[in-house]
Length: 425
Image (cartoon, rainbow, N blue to C red; front, side):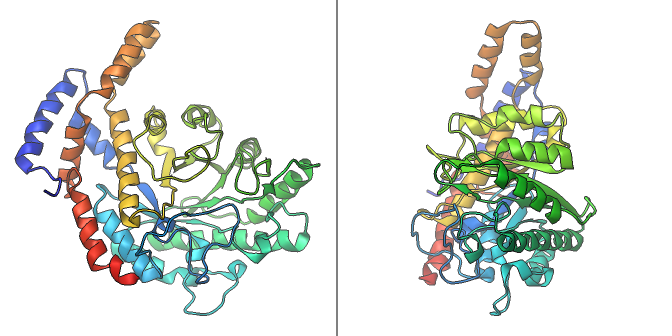
C-alpha cells in the first residue's frame, strides 16, 4: 500500500464534506481557489542543514545549529535544486524559493561574502526562469570570521560593523537583481544573531550602533515592486541568551519609523507566546508582514512544522480581512535527522492544511456570536470545526493539483532516496 486513495474514494468523500461545510454556509470550491493562490517561500537551507557552499565545513557558529546526520544531503547547487524540484512536485500549488547568501555559486573562486554580486546567483536565476519560480533572499550574518565576536551590525568595532554594512548593501543589490530577473518582488530579509550570553552592562550602545548601521544598509532607494526589505527580531539565541540587540521592540520601532516590512518568526519569542496575536496589531502600522513558519520545542529549535494549535492560530489570523495580501509566508526549519525532502513536504503541507482549516472556519457565524456576546456559542463553533471533514477537502485539493493523497507522496520520496540521495554517501 502506498497510502494514496483512489479517485473514486476521494470524490465520494469530498462530496460528503462539501455538503457538510455548505450546511455551515461555507463554499469549499471558492475556499480551494483562495488556498491555491497562497504561495509559501520554501527555504533552501533545509536541503543541506544550513551548510551553504562557502566551504566543506558548513556552519561554524553564529547562533544556528542543525542536528542529525541523515544520509543524502545536498552538496552543491545542482543537487540542492534537484531536491527542491522533487519537494515542490509533492506540494500542491505554486510556490517560491528562499535563498541565503551562503548559497552563492562562485565557480570555485574564493569570494568574500561582502563582495558577493548578482552574477554569483546566475545559476539560481536561470533555474528560477526555467521553473517559473520566484526567489527571495537573505543576507547571511553568521558562520563567518567577522562574526566571531558575536556581533555584526551592532558591533562596536567600526571595521566589523562596516564589513557587515557592505554585506547588507550587497544583499539588497542581489535581491534587486533577482526581482528584475523574475519580474516580481523579491523579499529580502535581514536577521543578525548579535547579543550577549550573560547580562550586558550597556544595552543602549549596541542598539544605537545597530540603528545607524541599518540606516546605512538601507540608504539606496530601490523600487518596492522589485525588492522589499524586511527586518527580523529575536528574543534569544545560542550564545545570546541574555541579550539580543535586535529585539522585537527594536525592530517594530524601526519598521514603523523607516517604513520597512517586519518579520515575525514563530520560534523567536518566548515559548508560551504566539505570534498570531501580534498580526492584527502590527498591520495597523505596517503595510506588509513577513512570517517565518517554524516550530520551537522548548526553545527556538526549528523543528519541522506540524499541524499544531499555534500554526492554526497563525493561519486563522492571516486569513482575516485583507491580510492574505499583506502577510507573506516563508518556511524556516532545518532537521538533519530525517529525510530532508520529506521534511520540506511535511512542513509545507502542514502549513497549507492550517490555512485550509482557517479558510473553512464558519467565520460569519463566529463573528455573529461574538457580537451578540454569546461566548458559549462561539466556543462551541470553534470546537465543532476541529472534527469537520478537513481531510476530505485536502485530498480533493491534492487531487486537483496532481499531488499524491495521504502518505502517497512518501512513496515517491522513498524512491527518490533510493535512486538519488543514497548515492551521495
